[in-house]
Image 1: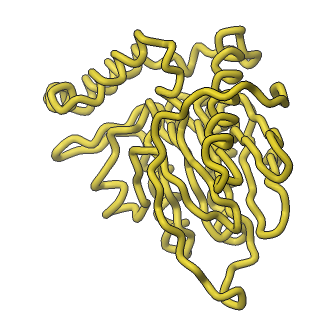
Image 2: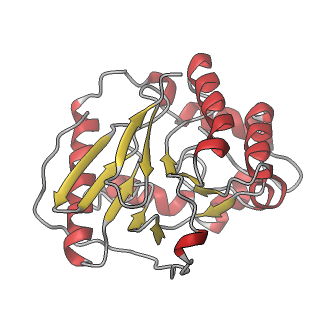
Length: 272
């Protein structure tokens, strides 16, 4: 499941720190924290989407928290009076999981960074747009989706700035859900991706491993860096008791990361 090696350091450009909250050990939940990414609801095969929703419905019984590290949706944009159609079942399962007591954090990815009020107020998710550092079951963890970290890809860096500008968001909002969905569908490449990754995908995966190794080297307080974006699951012990993990995806792999207090991180595959 991907190369397992350490790499020379590159300079991480951003880390947003959030202080942890101390909880007495007797009150701590012994269940693991799950981290998944790149589900791409709306563009995955029906059997993969069904598998993810079945897994999601079970998570409140076996995990203490769920972090969805970007690209939960293949396209998500909240219009003033509408949300993207076609996600009714997925949103219902998410709401049921939250109502069952499961805290869910959604990190905006390059396909669904434009989320916001509806996901927070109606579904009950915590929605984040920027990388964050948090204590997760004893692991001081840097979480980022992973897009935009390849600073050598100048074309994407420029496109990313344009797509996230206020002017672009306003203009896209004028298209309406149906036309906006068609435009986004033409841009998305999810449905065209091969099960076997090409060399460009492997290059991106190696670059994110390099970036994670640098982040660990530059911040000795970190225990773990978790990314997504490449769709390639990886778990690598970069230094003793310090790890890089990529949770993979639910387009092809059905993989996720599990963090349990006092145990090394695990990369799990759901086979239900």
